[in-house]
Image (cartoon, rainbow, N blue to C red):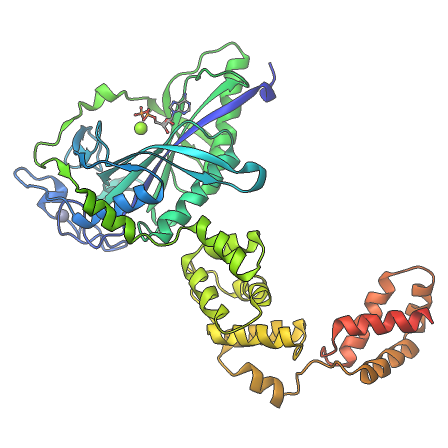
Length: 474
Ligand code: ADP
Ligand code: MG
Ligand code: ZN
């Protein structure tokens, strides 16, 4: 048996916290990082007699996600009680949705080029989050602030077949949810978490193997690593003639392995029942249409439009749309220049080196970087100067065009000046000249470097190279 004769079959269950101000069934704030147990009330703690009321905004955001992910939206759905005891769930049940989810039958295109594929989304339902356990050396503490934070759970069809597919899906999904303002998707704060279901099957087969569920992975890199490890582990069992168990495992980031948590619960174990404290959830077509109308432009459509409108390459457009704040910064800056391609270059290769915040928080005014792109496009400055100006703007604002003037940073494009510099350089670097004439083409780079330094980095690099070649071939 060969590992390469098998393919993984993967389905994801993604939990995203909705960006509401208050919890799903009470008015407690959803803020992250507050002192433990300060954002709780009888409703989110599930004290006897407390009654939930559904947060309208949570439903709107879930519908928005459903529409952006090409789902049908149920005009009639309901909430269900999923009973299980867990120390971070004081109610001993979670309000979720079982047979009638709010959104169903959707999907999205993920990946680029050869890896582009459509992945089905079986359902999206709303539910409440549980609290958090904090394990110290000799005790376990509970923080209930997260109890009742609204979540959507997005369940994919088992249509992903590699760690890369799963990564592509999660990246595309995150972009959409962030763009639509549905969720912050901050994995480090737990606002996006993923369960991975994975089984193996012989390539070409249509049957499904026994699946293992890996719970609550909180980074895309770990999702990919967990899949790689688990596929191998399952193969090793099958290769020895063993049987796989349907089980729930966890990924241990420090060992890179998955570990057994428990045998898989079955739906019966949860004793689902229609939530008696909440009425059925009914949405009119008008409600749904109003939410659809307010949907922003989605990342794929936006990337296609940027590619068309500005002539930038698709890969760059995809980076730009991956963060809505970056995209709006780019589009705003583009209104100030006729050189969007140069603008893109300065933005992606220079400016982004200085910003690591998520979402993008511009360290330089859009007008400024646009002005530099314009000067670069006109030939007023060369690209070295343009990059230096961007770097300087990160430290503090100034008018780049005026600075180029006052500091004499304009590009030198005068043939005679450059010719003089080239001749001087050749005289002073006889060895490099000899090397070049003996076929060492790298020597030309060194000569260009010397000449560039003589002009304090201001020469037009294209013209400089041209003149060097001209003179050297004489
Ligand atoms: P459950 O309710 O028990 O969690 P679901 O039918 O809702 O099961 O499926 C949960 C996830 O498991 C879905 O993402 C689905 O695509 C995936 N899945 C189902 N069967 C398989 C399988 N044989 N291999 C891999 N993933 C699977
Ligand atoms: Mg499940
Ligand atoms: Zn509350």
